[in-house]
Image (cartoon, rainbow, N blue to C red):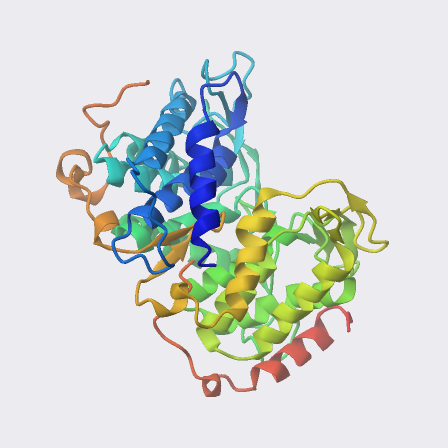
Length: 454
């Protein structure tokens, strides 16, 4: 937002008051994407010689945020030890390590979505340890995918490698795993990340996608991505969750804009009906299965990225619709409240951090055409928690690659290993004419056909 005084005040507050030397057990995934990612992003903003957002420098800054990020990551490292697969424990105590009664089961997204933040840290420090453990976890999960379908499940035992949850979908438990395969490639340029993403995307298209082949023409139901058994590809249930609304944004990043338009229409149709996205929606019963809405950002994120890709003002109208719903149904005296029930609009006394770091940020950027994120000439990518990271040469350089990543792959333990979380300026702007119908017509057709929501 260009508010340098508030940014500098917040940075100093964090430096002066935050310590990770606490007897506190945290989720490795959440601590990584919310805390580690924000420290690294802010550090990069402070030390950027171009200062595109205004003067965000801190007087006498001595890389304190980078040191704090290092300290936090070191405290998270025990999660990666003593697991037979290399897949990390889901929780770790910041003082004492993995709790004695720790659960051996973790979700694929939680264990396999650490590479962006850990990779940035490794490349800024010149220490391969963090990227290595995160890559080892990704490759371990990848090796467990079904030989028949190429799909992964959503819950795995970190000691045996046995799939406890065999559901494969695009929502909770798997969403950011796919997101970070592509974003890791965008940021670091490691070809194996893109190869894994492309293979995963093909399996998703083959086994999860239902409905007619073309987005806006032909017979049959509009496209929808469902939850299936990872081994057989058979339908497991008839609901989708709100986290899946991130996927159109990911499709924009990989260039499948037309399918992104179609899928986005499905989630927007649900929003139009309730003024929010229920946590789960049963597409067969045409009704919510789980009724709360914790101010999630995924639909806003996809709206923003689709607008950047198409520049079609329809998405500005979608953003305004979402903004007005938030103002009408969730605003309270001290912030914005989680909706306990999307139909009666009852509230909970809770506002998640991702509402500020993602929901508000993507809405702000959607309407701010002249923002430096769009106009500075620097290419940016957002982490899964909405932290902005410039895509540049510094993060493409891994001085340890030949030693630790022979043939481009992280196959060996780094010699010093010891135990001590979406590009906004898409390079191409597709012309609306490449679609057989104007976007608004596509949406109206989609919305009419989806579930009779409008």
